[in-house]
Amino acid sequence: MREEAAQRHRSVDTGRTVIVGDVHGCRAELETLLDRIAFHTGDRLVFAGDLVARGPDSRGVLQVARRTGAIVVRGNHDAKILAYREAAKEKKRPPVALGKNHLGVVESLTDPDWAVLETSSLYVDLPEHGVRVVHAGVLPGIPIEEQDPKVLLHIRTVSDGALWGERYAGPPHIVFGHNAVERLQIHPWATGLDTGCVYGGRLSALVLEHGQSIPQDRPERLALIVSVPAGRVYYDPITKNPVDS
Image 1 (cartoon, rainbow, N blue to C red):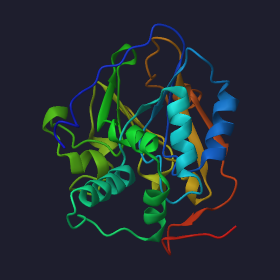
Image 2 (cartoon, rainbow, N blue to C red; image 1 turned 135 degrees about the horizontal axis):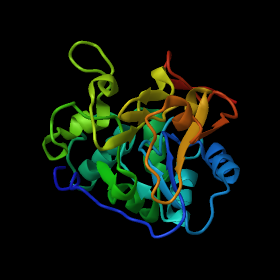
Image 3 (cartoon, helix red, strand yellow; image 1 turned 90 degrees about the vertical axis):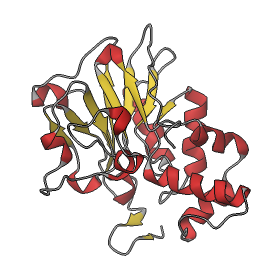
Image 4 (cartoon, helix red, strand yellow; image 1 turned 90 degrees about the horizontal axis):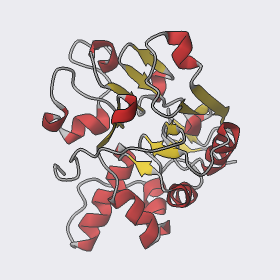
């Protein structure tokens, strides 16, 4: 896992950088969001993790990732099915039991789909924007190379119960997902983009022009975020079950 966490520096010569929060299989909303942004060749797409599970079309989301050449940061749901697949290949007991929804995703994916997840990173640096993208966040005060992968995949709060983003002081500015309960999170040095699309909320993206840094000013930052509404509630966070259409 530590090797998978190796830092990746990505740069782009022209075009915008579009960072998308947790999609969770909501392909229709993803396509609508990209249309709203007028995403085009030359733009760069970055996913902040949890592309799959809970929503209706995980394969479709991975197909969009392949089609656009997206950079994919690994989320906890992505990691969960990857661990299950690895255990199955080695004929070992899976580290976690999968429910029906996640098993359905595992059974539906093709080798090219798996390749998108297998080549994902626990974090990615976008130095031209002064940005680091992780799925859940970081433990403030610890260098990224020393962060526990479980923290990068799961953290929401620190020991005193505060949101980790409230305690984090950059640089770099961290863009993350994972915590849909809080909706958009706008902290001085962190921006949370999980707006709960799969739960009937919205799918959100941060759109940065070439070389643009994330502004500290809240209204200026909010102006860079584009959201589209979910088509419906796909998954009930209370019962933890899919919602039939």
